[in-house]
Image (cartoon, rainbow, N blue to C red; front, top):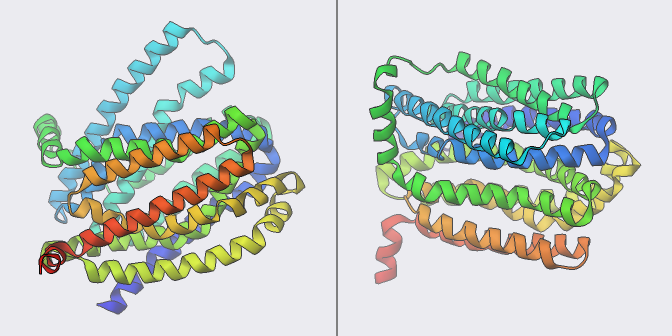
Length: 415
Protein backbone atom coordinates (compact mmCIF):
# COMPACT_ATOMS: atom_id res chain seq x y z
CA UNK A 1 0.00 0.00 0.00
CA UNK A 2 2.79 2.42 0.93
CA UNK A 3 4.74 1.69 -2.25
CA UNK A 4 1.58 1.99 -4.33
CA UNK A 5 0.82 5.39 -2.79
CA UNK A 6 4.23 6.87 -3.61
CA UNK A 7 4.33 5.22 -7.01
CA UNK A 8 1.07 6.95 -7.85
CA UNK A 9 2.34 10.27 -6.47
CA UNK A 10 5.49 9.94 -8.60
CA UNK A 11 3.41 9.22 -11.69
CA UNK A 12 1.19 12.27 -11.22
CA UNK A 13 4.22 14.34 -10.21
CA UNK A 14 5.90 13.57 -13.54
CA UNK A 15 2.90 14.74 -15.51
CA UNK A 16 2.44 17.84 -13.34
CA UNK A 17 6.12 18.67 -13.68
CA UNK A 18 5.96 18.58 -17.47
CA UNK A 19 2.72 20.58 -17.48
CA UNK A 20 4.25 23.25 -15.23
CA UNK A 21 7.64 23.43 -16.95
CA UNK A 22 6.06 24.22 -20.31
CA UNK A 23 4.49 27.56 -19.22
CA UNK A 24 7.68 28.69 -17.50
CA UNK A 25 9.83 27.83 -20.50
CA UNK A 26 7.28 29.65 -22.62
CA UNK A 27 7.47 32.61 -20.26
CA UNK A 28 11.15 32.99 -21.19
CA UNK A 29 9.96 34.04 -24.64
CA UNK A 30 6.67 35.66 -23.65
CA UNK A 31 8.33 37.97 -21.10
CA UNK A 32 10.69 39.27 -23.79
CA UNK A 33 7.92 39.63 -26.38
CA UNK A 34 5.38 41.53 -24.30
CA UNK A 35 7.31 43.34 -21.53
CA UNK A 36 6.23 44.04 -17.91
CA UNK A 37 3.44 46.49 -18.79
CA UNK A 38 1.48 44.27 -21.20
CA UNK A 39 2.17 41.18 -19.09
CA UNK A 40 0.86 43.01 -16.01
CA UNK A 41 -2.35 44.05 -17.83
CA UNK A 42 -2.93 40.49 -19.05
CA UNK A 43 -2.31 39.13 -15.55
CA UNK A 44 -4.87 41.51 -14.06
CA UNK A 45 -7.40 40.33 -16.69
CA UNK A 46 -6.49 36.69 -16.00
CA UNK A 47 -7.13 37.31 -12.31
CA UNK A 48 -10.72 38.25 -13.13
CA UNK A 49 -11.03 35.14 -15.31
CA UNK A 50 -9.93 32.89 -12.46
CA UNK A 51 -12.28 34.60 -10.02
CA UNK A 52 -15.23 34.10 -12.40
CA UNK A 53 -14.23 30.49 -13.10
CA UNK A 54 -14.56 29.78 -9.39
CA UNK A 55 -18.16 30.97 -9.45
CA UNK A 56 -19.52 29.33 -12.61
CA UNK A 57 -19.17 25.73 -11.38
CA UNK A 58 -20.66 26.44 -7.97
CA UNK A 59 -17.53 24.60 -6.77
CA UNK A 60 -19.41 21.35 -7.32
CA UNK A 61 -16.41 19.91 -9.18
CA UNK A 62 -14.63 19.67 -5.82
CA UNK A 63 -17.26 17.15 -4.71
CA UNK A 64 -16.49 14.71 -7.53
CA UNK A 65 -13.96 12.83 -5.39
CA UNK A 66 -16.71 12.16 -2.85
CA UNK A 67 -18.82 10.22 -5.37
CA UNK A 68 -18.46 6.52 -6.05
CA UNK A 69 -16.42 5.45 -9.09
CA UNK A 70 -17.87 4.81 -12.51
CA UNK A 71 -21.49 5.57 -13.42
CA UNK A 72 -22.20 7.61 -10.29
CA UNK A 73 -19.32 10.00 -10.93
CA UNK A 74 -20.23 10.26 -14.62
CA UNK A 75 -23.69 11.49 -13.60
CA UNK A 76 -22.01 13.93 -11.23
CA UNK A 77 -19.74 15.22 -14.00
CA UNK A 78 -22.78 15.74 -16.21
CA UNK A 79 -24.46 17.74 -13.43
CA UNK A 80 -21.34 19.89 -13.05
CA UNK A 81 -21.21 20.49 -16.81
CA UNK A 82 -24.85 21.64 -16.95
CA UNK A 83 -24.43 23.86 -13.89
CA UNK A 84 -21.33 25.49 -15.36
CA UNK A 85 -22.89 26.23 -18.75
CA UNK A 86 -26.12 27.65 -17.29
CA UNK A 87 -24.24 29.83 -14.82
CA UNK A 88 -21.90 31.07 -17.55
CA UNK A 89 -24.86 32.12 -19.69
CA UNK A 90 -26.32 34.07 -16.76
CA UNK A 91 -22.99 35.78 -16.06
CA UNK A 92 -22.57 36.63 -19.75
CA UNK A 93 -25.99 38.27 -19.85
CA UNK A 94 -25.25 40.33 -16.74
CA UNK A 95 -21.85 41.52 -17.94
CA UNK A 96 -23.20 42.22 -21.43
CA UNK A 97 -25.94 44.38 -19.95
CA UNK A 98 -23.42 46.28 -17.85
CA UNK A 99 -21.24 46.86 -20.90
CA UNK A 100 -24.19 48.28 -22.87
CA UNK A 101 -25.13 50.56 -19.99
CA UNK A 102 -21.60 51.88 -19.38
CA UNK A 103 -20.79 52.23 -23.10
CA UNK A 104 -17.04 51.51 -23.13
CA UNK A 105 -15.76 51.49 -26.72
CA UNK A 106 -11.99 51.13 -26.36
CA UNK A 107 -10.74 48.27 -28.53
CA UNK A 108 -8.59 46.55 -25.95
CA UNK A 109 -11.24 46.88 -23.26
CA UNK A 110 -13.94 45.53 -25.58
CA UNK A 111 -11.91 42.55 -26.77
CA UNK A 112 -10.84 41.66 -23.24
CA UNK A 113 -14.47 41.85 -22.16
CA UNK A 114 -15.68 39.67 -25.05
CA UNK A 115 -13.39 36.76 -24.19
CA UNK A 116 -13.74 37.15 -20.40
CA UNK A 117 -16.71 34.87 -19.70
CA UNK A 118 -15.94 32.26 -22.39
CA UNK A 119 -12.39 32.00 -21.06
CA UNK A 120 -13.60 31.70 -17.46
CA UNK A 121 -16.04 28.96 -18.49
CA UNK A 122 -13.38 27.00 -20.36
CA UNK A 123 -10.94 27.39 -17.48
CA UNK A 124 -13.58 26.04 -15.07
CA UNK A 125 -14.44 23.09 -17.32
CA UNK A 126 -10.77 22.18 -17.73
CA UNK A 127 -10.41 22.13 -13.95
CA UNK A 128 -13.60 20.07 -13.58
CA UNK A 129 -12.41 17.43 -16.05
CA UNK A 130 -9.04 17.21 -14.32
CA UNK A 131 -10.80 16.80 -10.96
CA UNK A 132 -12.93 14.06 -12.49
CA UNK A 133 -9.90 12.20 -13.83
CA UNK A 134 -8.13 12.45 -10.46
CA UNK A 135 -11.22 11.27 -8.58
CA UNK A 136 -11.49 8.24 -10.87
CA UNK A 137 -7.83 7.42 -10.34
CA UNK A 138 -7.14 7.91 -14.07
CA UNK A 139 -3.83 9.62 -13.48
CA UNK A 140 -2.45 8.88 -16.94
CA UNK A 141 -5.32 10.77 -18.54
CA UNK A 142 -4.94 13.51 -15.94
CA UNK A 143 -1.30 13.99 -16.93
CA UNK A 144 -2.23 14.09 -20.59
CA UNK A 145 -4.90 16.74 -19.95
CA UNK A 146 -2.51 19.00 -18.06
CA UNK A 147 0.31 18.69 -20.55
CA UNK A 148 -2.03 19.31 -23.49
CA UNK A 149 -3.48 22.44 -21.85
CA UNK A 150 -0.01 23.84 -21.22
CA UNK A 151 1.15 23.16 -24.78
CA UNK A 152 -1.93 24.65 -26.44
CA UNK A 153 -1.87 27.85 -24.37
CA UNK A 154 1.88 28.50 -24.49
CA UNK A 155 2.34 27.80 -28.20
CA UNK A 156 -0.57 30.04 -29.16
CA UNK A 157 0.64 32.87 -26.90
CA UNK A 158 4.15 32.73 -28.38
CA UNK A 159 2.73 32.83 -31.91
CA UNK A 160 0.49 35.76 -30.93
CA UNK A 161 3.52 37.60 -29.55
CA UNK A 162 5.23 37.43 -32.93
CA UNK A 163 2.41 39.22 -34.76
CA UNK A 164 0.52 41.18 -32.08
CA UNK A 165 2.44 41.74 -28.80
CA UNK A 166 -0.40 43.13 -26.67
CA UNK A 167 -2.33 42.03 -23.59
CA UNK A 168 -5.37 41.43 -25.81
CA UNK A 169 -3.41 38.96 -27.93
CA UNK A 170 -2.30 37.13 -24.79
CA UNK A 171 -5.92 36.90 -23.63
CA UNK A 172 -7.37 35.71 -26.94
CA UNK A 173 -4.67 33.08 -27.46
CA UNK A 174 -5.18 31.91 -23.86
CA UNK A 175 -8.91 31.44 -24.51
CA UNK A 176 -8.28 29.53 -27.75
CA UNK A 177 -5.75 27.29 -26.00
CA UNK A 178 -8.28 26.44 -23.30
CA UNK A 179 -10.89 25.63 -25.95
CA UNK A 180 -8.57 23.13 -27.63
CA UNK A 181 -7.61 21.68 -24.25
CA UNK A 182 -11.26 21.19 -23.27
CA UNK A 183 -12.02 19.41 -26.53
CA UNK A 184 -9.10 17.09 -25.82
CA UNK A 185 -10.31 16.47 -22.24
CA UNK A 186 -13.79 15.50 -23.46
CA UNK A 187 -12.24 13.14 -26.00
CA UNK A 188 -10.10 11.45 -23.34
CA UNK A 189 -12.86 11.28 -20.72
CA UNK A 190 -16.26 11.62 -22.42
CA UNK A 191 -19.31 12.43 -20.34
CA UNK A 192 -22.43 10.45 -21.16
CA UNK A 193 -25.26 12.44 -22.68
CA UNK A 194 -27.93 9.81 -22.03
CA UNK A 195 -29.15 11.86 -19.08
CA UNK A 196 -29.85 14.90 -21.24
CA UNK A 197 -33.61 14.47 -21.02
CA UNK A 198 -33.39 14.49 -17.22
CA UNK A 199 -30.79 17.24 -16.90
CA UNK A 200 -32.87 19.45 -14.62
CA UNK A 201 -33.75 16.90 -11.87
CA UNK A 202 -30.23 15.45 -12.01
CA UNK A 203 -28.63 18.87 -11.62
CA UNK A 204 -30.99 19.93 -8.82
CA UNK A 205 -30.58 16.62 -6.97
CA UNK A 206 -26.81 16.83 -7.13
CA UNK A 207 -26.85 20.44 -5.96
CA UNK A 208 -29.10 19.54 -3.02
CA UNK A 209 -26.89 16.60 -2.03
CA UNK A 210 -23.81 18.82 -2.01
CA UNK A 211 -25.51 22.03 -0.91
CA UNK A 212 -22.71 22.82 1.54
CA UNK A 213 -20.40 23.33 -1.40
CA UNK A 214 -22.83 25.89 -2.77
CA UNK A 215 -23.53 27.49 0.60
CA UNK A 216 -19.98 27.60 1.95
CA UNK A 217 -17.36 26.38 -0.55
CA UNK A 218 -18.57 28.60 -3.38
CA UNK A 219 -18.25 31.86 -1.42
CA UNK A 220 -15.10 30.59 0.31
CA UNK A 221 -13.32 29.67 -2.91
CA UNK A 222 -14.60 32.80 -4.63
CA UNK A 223 -13.09 34.83 -1.80
CA UNK A 224 -9.90 32.77 -2.03
CA UNK A 225 -9.60 33.41 -5.78
CA UNK A 226 -10.24 37.09 -5.14
CA UNK A 227 -7.60 37.14 -2.38
CA UNK A 228 -5.06 35.42 -4.65
CA UNK A 229 -5.68 37.72 -7.63
CA UNK A 230 -6.24 40.91 -5.60
CA UNK A 231 -2.52 41.58 -4.99
CA UNK A 232 -1.85 42.03 -8.72
CA UNK A 233 -4.83 44.38 -9.04
CA UNK A 234 -3.90 46.46 -5.99
CA UNK A 235 -0.22 46.61 -6.95
CA UNK A 236 -1.20 47.70 -10.46
CA UNK A 237 -3.39 50.44 -9.01
CA UNK A 238 -0.95 51.67 -6.36
CA UNK A 239 2.47 51.07 -7.87
CA UNK A 240 1.86 50.75 -11.63
CA UNK A 241 1.51 48.09 -14.34
CA UNK A 242 5.23 47.27 -14.34
CA UNK A 243 5.19 46.34 -10.65
CA UNK A 244 2.08 44.23 -11.32
CA UNK A 245 3.97 42.53 -14.16
CA UNK A 246 6.88 41.72 -11.84
CA UNK A 247 4.49 40.30 -9.25
CA UNK A 248 2.58 38.25 -11.84
CA UNK A 249 5.78 36.67 -13.14
CA UNK A 250 6.95 35.92 -9.61
CA UNK A 251 3.67 34.19 -8.80
CA UNK A 252 3.93 32.11 -11.98
CA UNK A 253 7.60 31.14 -11.58
CA UNK A 254 7.82 30.83 -7.80
CA UNK A 255 4.77 28.63 -7.75
CA UNK A 256 6.32 26.27 -10.30
CA UNK A 257 8.46 24.01 -8.08
CA UNK A 258 5.69 23.89 -5.49
CA UNK A 259 3.07 22.93 -8.08
CA UNK A 260 5.19 20.00 -9.25
CA UNK A 261 4.78 17.93 -6.12
CA UNK A 262 1.89 19.82 -4.53
CA UNK A 263 -0.62 19.04 -7.29
CA UNK A 264 0.55 15.46 -7.58
CA UNK A 265 0.21 14.90 -3.83
CA UNK A 266 -3.21 16.60 -3.75
CA UNK A 267 -4.59 14.44 -6.57
CA UNK A 268 -3.52 11.27 -4.78
CA UNK A 269 -4.20 12.52 -1.23
CA UNK A 270 -7.83 13.50 -1.82
CA UNK A 271 -8.62 10.07 -3.26
CA UNK A 272 -6.75 8.16 -0.54
CA UNK A 273 -8.08 10.35 2.27
CA UNK A 274 -11.66 10.14 0.97
CA UNK A 275 -11.43 6.34 0.84
CA UNK A 276 -9.93 6.24 4.35
CA UNK A 277 -12.72 8.43 5.69
CA UNK A 278 -15.40 6.16 4.21
CA UNK A 279 -13.70 3.09 5.72
CA UNK A 280 -12.45 4.37 9.12
CA UNK A 281 -14.10 7.73 9.75
CA UNK A 282 -10.69 9.47 9.86
CA UNK A 283 -7.59 9.93 7.69
CA UNK A 284 -4.87 10.90 10.19
CA UNK A 285 -2.31 8.43 8.81
CA UNK A 286 -2.70 9.75 5.25
CA UNK A 287 -2.55 13.32 6.54
CA UNK A 288 0.66 12.88 8.54
CA UNK A 289 2.38 10.95 5.76
CA UNK A 290 1.54 13.69 3.29
CA UNK A 291 2.54 16.46 5.70
CA UNK A 292 6.11 15.19 6.06
CA UNK A 293 6.81 14.92 2.35
CA UNK A 294 5.37 18.38 1.73
CA UNK A 295 7.37 19.79 4.65
CA UNK A 296 10.62 18.40 3.29
CA UNK A 297 9.89 19.80 -0.14
CA UNK A 298 9.06 23.23 1.26
CA UNK A 299 12.39 23.48 3.11
CA UNK A 300 14.34 22.67 -0.06
CA UNK A 301 12.30 25.23 -1.98
CA UNK A 302 12.79 28.00 0.59
CA UNK A 303 16.58 27.61 0.67
CA UNK A 304 16.90 27.50 -3.11
CA UNK A 305 14.58 30.46 -3.67
CA UNK A 306 16.37 32.64 -1.12
CA UNK A 307 19.80 32.28 -2.73
CA UNK A 308 18.91 31.88 -6.42
CA UNK A 309 15.82 33.99 -7.18
CA UNK A 310 17.43 37.32 -8.12
CA UNK A 311 20.16 36.01 -10.47
CA UNK A 312 17.84 33.44 -12.04
CA UNK A 313 15.22 36.06 -12.93
CA UNK A 314 17.84 38.41 -14.39
CA UNK A 315 19.52 35.69 -16.46
CA UNK A 316 16.39 33.87 -17.61
CA UNK A 317 14.10 36.79 -18.41
CA UNK A 318 16.49 39.66 -18.96
CA UNK A 319 17.92 42.40 -16.77
CA UNK A 320 14.69 44.39 -16.86
CA UNK A 321 13.08 41.60 -14.80
CA UNK A 322 15.65 41.71 -11.96
CA UNK A 323 13.18 43.54 -9.65
CA UNK A 324 10.96 40.46 -9.92
CA UNK A 325 13.78 38.39 -8.41
CA UNK A 326 14.04 40.79 -5.49
CA UNK A 327 10.26 40.65 -5.01
CA UNK A 328 10.27 36.84 -5.02
CA UNK A 329 12.49 36.69 -1.92
CA UNK A 330 9.85 38.64 0.02
CA UNK A 331 7.18 36.09 -0.93
CA UNK A 332 9.08 32.97 0.22
CA UNK A 333 7.20 32.61 3.57
CA UNK A 334 3.83 32.62 1.83
CA UNK A 335 4.74 30.11 -0.86
CA UNK A 336 6.52 27.81 1.57
CA UNK A 337 3.48 27.43 3.83
CA UNK A 338 1.07 27.31 0.88
CA UNK A 339 2.90 24.28 -0.46
CA UNK A 340 2.13 22.39 2.74
CA UNK A 341 -1.31 23.70 3.64
CA UNK A 342 -3.12 23.78 0.29
CA UNK A 343 -3.15 20.02 -0.48
CA UNK A 344 -3.95 19.09 3.12
CA UNK A 345 -6.85 21.54 3.27
CA UNK A 346 -8.96 19.04 1.30
CA UNK A 347 -9.63 17.42 4.67
CA UNK A 348 -12.09 20.28 5.28
CA UNK A 349 -14.22 19.07 2.36
CA UNK A 350 -13.99 15.41 3.32
CA UNK A 351 -15.33 16.14 6.81
CA UNK A 352 -18.01 18.49 5.48
CA UNK A 353 -16.69 21.53 7.38
CA UNK A 354 -16.88 24.04 4.57
CA UNK A 355 -18.13 26.76 6.93
CA UNK A 356 -14.75 26.75 8.68
CA UNK A 357 -13.01 27.28 5.35
CA UNK A 358 -15.35 30.20 4.61
CA UNK A 359 -14.39 31.96 7.86
CA UNK A 360 -10.68 31.45 7.13
CA UNK A 361 -11.03 32.80 3.60
CA UNK A 362 -12.80 35.93 4.86
CA UNK A 363 -9.88 36.55 7.24
CA UNK A 364 -7.46 36.05 4.34
CA UNK A 365 -9.30 38.52 2.12
CA UNK A 366 -9.44 41.14 4.87
CA UNK A 367 -5.72 40.74 5.55
CA UNK A 368 -4.80 40.94 1.84
CA UNK A 369 -6.80 44.09 1.20
CA UNK A 370 -5.73 45.82 4.41
CA UNK A 371 -2.00 45.16 4.10
CA UNK A 372 -1.57 45.84 0.38
CA UNK A 373 -3.83 48.90 0.38
CA UNK A 374 -2.49 50.76 3.39
CA UNK A 375 1.15 49.79 4.04
CA UNK A 376 3.25 52.66 2.71
CA UNK A 377 5.97 51.22 0.48
CA UNK A 378 5.80 48.44 -2.10
CA UNK A 379 8.46 46.20 -0.55
CA UNK A 380 7.11 46.59 2.99
CA UNK A 381 3.55 45.84 1.85
CA UNK A 382 4.58 42.66 0.03
CA UNK A 383 6.74 41.40 2.92
CA UNK A 384 4.05 41.96 5.57
CA UNK A 385 1.49 40.38 3.24
CA UNK A 386 3.72 37.32 2.77
CA UNK A 387 4.39 36.79 6.48
CA UNK A 388 0.73 37.34 7.43
CA UNK A 389 -0.35 34.84 4.78
CA UNK A 390 2.09 32.27 6.18
CA UNK A 391 0.69 32.73 9.69
CA UNK A 392 -2.84 32.16 8.43
CA UNK A 393 -1.69 28.96 6.73
CA UNK A 394 -0.30 27.74 10.05
CA UNK A 395 -3.75 28.19 11.57
CA UNK A 396 -5.25 26.31 8.63
CA UNK A 397 -2.86 23.40 9.17
CA UNK A 398 -3.83 23.13 12.83
CA UNK A 399 -7.52 23.07 11.92
CA UNK A 400 -7.17 20.52 9.12
CA UNK A 401 -5.04 18.20 11.29
CA UNK A 402 -7.69 18.27 14.02
CA UNK A 403 -10.36 17.18 11.56
CA UNK A 404 -8.15 14.47 10.04
CA UNK A 405 -8.17 12.69 13.40
CA UNK A 406 -11.93 12.23 13.12
CA UNK A 407 -14.05 11.08 16.02
CA UNK A 408 -11.06 9.42 17.72
CA UNK A 409 -9.60 12.89 18.34
CA UNK A 410 -12.80 14.05 20.00
CA UNK A 411 -12.94 10.93 22.15
CA UNK A 412 -9.34 11.44 23.37
CA UNK A 413 -10.08 15.09 24.07
CA UNK A 414 -12.99 14.09 26.34
CA UNK A 415 -10.91 11.67 28.41
